Image 1 (cartoon, rainbow, N blue to C red):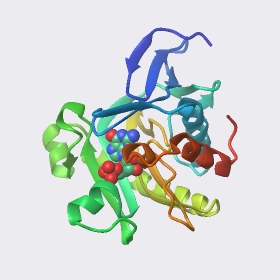
Image 2: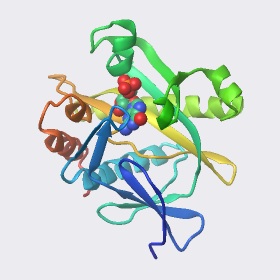
Image 3: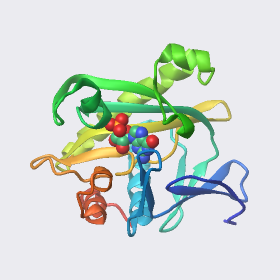
Amino acid sequence: MEKGKMIHEGKAKQLFLTDNPDEVLVWFKDDVTAFDGGKKGTIQSKGILNNSISSFFFELLQSRGISTHFVKKLDERGMIVKRLSIIPIEIVVRNISAGSLAKRFGWEEGRRLTKPVVELYYKDDALGDPLINRSHAAALDIAAPTQLDVMEDTACKVNLILERFLATKNLLLVDFKLEFGTHKGQIMLGDEISPDTCRFWDAITNEKLDKDRFRRDLGNVEEAYREIWLRLGCNA
Ligand code: 5GP
């Protein structure tokens, strides 16, 4: 596999062309940002851990019939994925109140929601990724209603699969963010699934094992990511 030109650099990942025009190489960095880039840092080995954890989750989801961009884990920090045209919507699914939901309604963190809450955010850094609804998506002309149906339905299925699986590892899936794109007209789950994009709590102690440790200066950030990797038993 030939690593070609870098075509995109995000906060946590770089994207490179490969010799296959249908596939790109995702390279996971140790850089971490929060609060729309207002807080920056580095988490030692995060790129290696997130590549392993994401590869593990994509393989699990694909084995349960979810269509994802994942092709294979290439090496420590590299993952080969199908090249997607990204739909600029972040789908967030929540099982337990935390983060911006807890803040919006003045709820304490840790309240179990009667049913999962599904939210849409417009992926636009300059606007700070605002919360939107389906009519905003139509007005913005960023996704067709049928595409939103597929994305929301898939996000709910992903939630069920991951929540049940993580329970066997003594982990609570508090909430998470997914991104989707199209490849040859087909909608696929893209981006990553990792402690950067999910809230994972220990099921007994509610200890936070995700990016909130960085956002809130809780310390032991690398240790938390490593703990997730250890509990999943995935390969680095
Ligand atoms: P909240 O809206 O509470 O800040 O985030 C909800 C969930 O979505 C959390 O698991 C959070 O990590 C994830 N999330 C939402 N937006 C982003 C984002 O722009 N980047 C990352 N890495 N995760 C996000």
